[in-house]
Image (cartoon, rainbow, N blue to C red; front, side, top):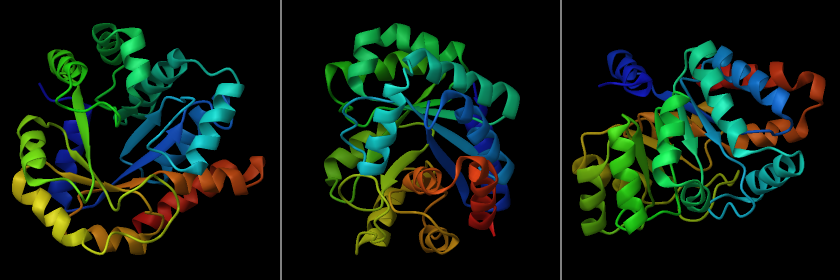
Amino acid sequence: MKNNLDRTIEKFGAGKKTGIMAHLVTGYPTLALSKKIAQSLVAGGADIIEIQVPFSDPMADGPLIVEACQKSLDNGTKVKDSFALAAFVDKTLKTPVVLMTYANIVIHMGIEKFCDECKKHKISGVIVPDLPHDSKEGEELKKQATRKGIHLIYVLSPAIEKERLEKISRQATGFLYCTSRQGTTGTGKRFASDLHSYLKRVKKSSHLPLAVGFGISSHKDIKEIKPEGDIAVIGSAVIDLIQKTPTQNILKTIEKFVVRLNQ
């Protein structure tokens, strides 16, 4: 059965639009603002909201998101707050949610219970970047997520080897998340020099849409990935805006930022 993410991605194909998946950290800068930030992202034109569960050691993330996670945890944000935010986004904003978290949280909760909670809170897909697809836990998460109608989104980097790419492509659903370069997230502007050949290689291995993330913060960046990228992932750029903007202006600034990305 198709979930909210599938139905949204189908619209990209019809309109040949590069979709936007905007990232936020639950509870940053506050829980109350997280809901309003999600509203501003959607009002600006974000098609998918990626909600990050704050974690004390977000190893795949750069300093901006690491700092946002720590501030959120200092605010007392709990895992249940991310689930509640996801349900709000799906129900109130009619926008699909992809939950980004780390293996420690999933395993500590219990893989089956985690997937039950995802389904209960209308989460369409999950990203667990530090959980290998061929580990015992990775295979169990794939099995449980599939049973609940949730996509397990795999993260690929330019250095991925052919055999591993083919294995992941065979079991992937939803979309494939391709990092634009090696390393962690952040506002670094340089994509990998072989970005397009790498994305073409992934395209050949899978019929799924490609989401491209890391270092995307402008309409120009989106145009650059457009030949192969179906979804642009906007992460650290949103956190950077929140950090630099006076609180009273954050919501309008974020909405305008996403509008510009779509122009």
